[in-house]
Each structure stands twice: as structure tokens, then as C-alpha cells.
Image 1 (tube, rainbow, N blue to C red):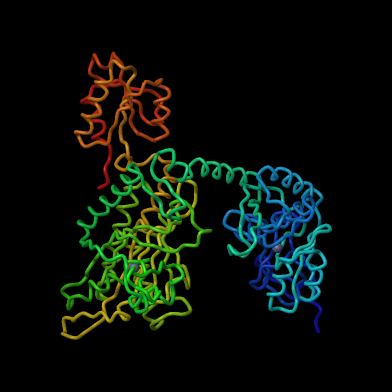
Image 2: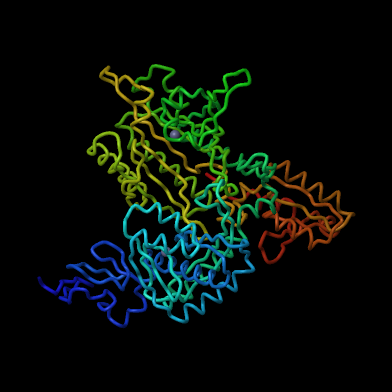
Length: 637
Ligand SMILES: [Zn+2]
Ligand SMILES: [Zn+2]
């Protein structure tokens, strides 16, 4: 048996002794940047020995996979610091999440943000000590006994659910954790990290289990990248839509209706302006709006497949006369099944197609209480939802039409960039692969025709058809998946929908589900954070506010507000006996784009002193000029 193996690294083939550690293959200059390696496709520690011919690809700390290694290693570092500082704390799990990591602890008392600086300081000491991080493999039984002896009940529970007979542990200094790895070679690799927040979290996300104390943090390959990220995080805090919603008087929540926003008059203006705008596009693009029932007998959900696949997320109910106790109705979580009845209500011919029906109907979804988050994760919502029933030949032009709408809408709302994906055939799917591949290619071509570069999202389509997903990066560099255009070959089958072809035969229509804003609630949340509340003029709940300098000009201020309202603008007058600075600050907090200040001089000259939101100086102008200025504000085409 040969004691040499062939290693390919950086395009170079080398013969090295069997058992050589990956670390030894890296050249010195790059050593500190590399945190792990992919060996024959598997991500492993740099300390792993090479035991066969291998393709080795070093993983840099700044790459997505490298960041995961770095962040999870930082989670370990944090847990080590926490257990050192807070004796009696048990560890549970500490996964990597988008932009960082967390670790859930069972401490004698819950952690607070005041604990974080101390933990961070201890982490820095441990990083400075550059403790080697060592992988240990042992039998599941031995590991279980080890953690039992340590009083780590949660780890014991985790180990008992591992099917493999051998488990791996990682040790640094005297501290160790059950873990698959991989990890950085030593704690000295962890140079740029920050603990960001604390929260309560139930063990395994189940509210019947004990409440744990979660600490969130993040780590980057360099201090500069960490700083940049923290800056965005701070911006996100000031732009949190829940905070803006309060400051701008847009919506409230109450525990009486969990996850269900109450839109206040100003919030309802934004809501309805969006709907009005989409309605104008519907008229232009040939969609017909329908209004459909909220409650359906469960039979509908059995036919549609929601009963089987979505029931946990549905609200079930019954009527007051029903004494059997059976919950025989459910609130719709989606409009699609209802729309099949509109299609099926008449005999359809190819001449009727495409049939495009749109619905702003309210939807209810029983999202788990732990996942609810302001407007971005709610239980009650409406979507700019539409379903298109068409012939297979029409799919291409219908996709085109919807992509044109996508461009119009995002352009009007100030989202310049779009990232498109085609989610392709999953392992479990209906229909033949050939049909899937053809349809996926059709979607790809449509995206290209509409000037949208796209990536494939392999295997991520629904089992009933491929999908176009449009992601929007916002001002905080976060990605939101907004529009979806989903082909569906299944629902027409389930509801036995047909049309008569030009040859007189019966055929199945294709159903396309599409939403561009998605849920209006979530969209408003995203838009508020993207714009920091400074909405396009046509969406601003209050477009102009007249601020009076004294009692003497109350009449004049009121007159201007009335004049603007008469011209169709949303305007008001702040006539309170308060200092101008105070009134301006309040108008700024409410994100009113135009503030018209009037004192005696303005009243005499029939003018205003106009301030713009975030503008540096004010400008004196006549009332006619003011109206012209507001009229010149762009409206969505
Ligand atoms: Zn781990
Ligand atoms: Zn649908």
C-alpha cells in the first residue's frame, strides 16, 4: 500500500504523505485568511488528515462558507466565556444565522444587554490566548456520560437523538462542546466580533418547554467589514418599521389580535394608495378584480391539497348553530382555490383565455407566535394576488406581461435593483422532467427578454411547477423576496378545470399564481425600512403641513391647508400655540415632505416660507408657486 496520496490544490497536483494535515498544504502567506477547506466536496477542519487522493479547496474567512465557520466558532467562544463567567449556566445549541450567530443558554437568571460587554471582554481574552481548537471523536454513549457528569441536560437530550454511534466534540482550553464542526484551528482566528442583543427563546421553539436566554452576535473576517455591518445594523434600528409606524402614526398592534395590525387613518392611506395604484395597472394590463368568500367548507381544502399541506397554518372554525363541535370551515390562507370556482363557473373556450383574475381579499395564516414580527410576519393580510388561467402556448406572453408589471411597480416605488431566480424542478414533482425543463427555459427566456439577469434556484420549485422569484435588495443591503410568478400544473387537475381548444377538444389550462408586492402588510414594512419613512410623495399620508407662527395667522394658515386640500393634496394645519422648532420637529418625525411656515409677513404678502423634509433652507414663494411645486411631484405612471 502506498503511503503517498495525490492532492490537487490551487490547480496543482502534489504527492504528499498519507495523513498530512490540510494546514500543512497551505502556503504561509495565506495561512491566516484560510479557516477551513473543502476536501472532495466536504467542508472540514484544517487539522483534518488527508486519508485518500483529494481535491482540496481552501476556504477563506471572508467567503460565505468561511464566514459560517468563523461565526460558529465565535458562538463557541461566546459559550466558553459565558460558562466561565456565569457558573451553573447550561449550554444548548448555537447555530449560524444570516449575518451572525446565536447561542441559547439555560442560565440561573436570564441575560440582559448589560451582561454583553463583560462577556465580550472575556471573549477577547480567550481569543488573545489563541487556544488551539481540537476535534475529538468518541462513542455516543461516552459523550452522553461525559455531558451528564457535567450537568448538561440539554446536551444529553441532543445526544440521545443522534442516530450515529460516534459523535464529535470540539475542545478549546478546558471547555468543550458537542459539535459537527468544522471550526477555526485556534481562537486567535477570531478577531472581529460583536455581541448584538439578547432575547428569550423556548427550548426547541416550543412554548411548552423552558424559556432559554439567547445571545445574538456576529463575526467577520476583518474589523472593517464588522464596522460596516454594525453601521447598517444601527441604521436598521433607527429605520425599524415598528418604530416608524409609531412615530408616523401608521399602525398599532394589540395582543387581542396577535399578528394582526390595526392600520390607523394615516397607515390606511398608504395601504389604499398602493391598492389604487395596482388597480390602475390592472386596468391597463387586462386583469379583472373579483371579491371572493373568506370562509369555505373544509371540502375545498381537501380538494386543493391545503388540508394535507397547509392545515397547521390555517384558522379552523364553525358556525354558531353547529353543536357537533367539528370545525368544518376554515378561513382562506390563499385565494387560489376560490378562484378555481370562478373559472369553473362557466364553460371555457380557448377564446376566453387568458383569464386574469385579481383579488385583494383578506387572508389569514396561523403563523406561530414566536415568528410574528411587526408587519413583516403577520397573521392577517391582503396581497396584490392574481391568478391567470391560460393555454400552455400563452404562458410565455403572460410571463412577459407580468414581468413588465414588475418593472413598472418596483420602478414607481424606488427599488432600482432586482434579482431574479428561476426555482426549478424539485426531487418530488408532478409531471415529466422534459416538460419541466422546457418550462424552466421559457421562464429564463422571458426574464432575459425583459432585461433581467437571473440565477437558477435548483430544486426549489414547488412540486407542481417552476417559479420566478424576484428579490429586492433594500437600502440596508438586505434581500427581500417580493414578487413571485408561479406556474401550476396541479391545481387545474385537482379542480378538473378544462377549456375547449380551437380543434374542439378538451384540454387543461395552466394556472399562474402571481403577486408583485406580495402581502401589502409586509410590503409596507419593507418600504418603510427601505425609505426610512420618507415615502414617495404620492404615498405620503400627509403631503403638506402648514405651520403657523402665531395666533394672528391662524386664519391664513387654515386657508392654505383648505386650498391645498381643494386641489386634491393631503394637507393639514398645525395651529397649536407651540414654538416653531417644536412643530417642525413633529412634522419631521411624521415625515411630512413639505412644511409651509406662515407668519405675519407671509400673511401680508400671501406667501409661505417652504421647508422640505431634510432640506437645509427654506424658500419664500407665492401660494400659486406652492401649488405648482406640489403638482410637479412625480406620480407613478
Ligand atoms: Zn458547535
Ligand atoms: Zn395562488
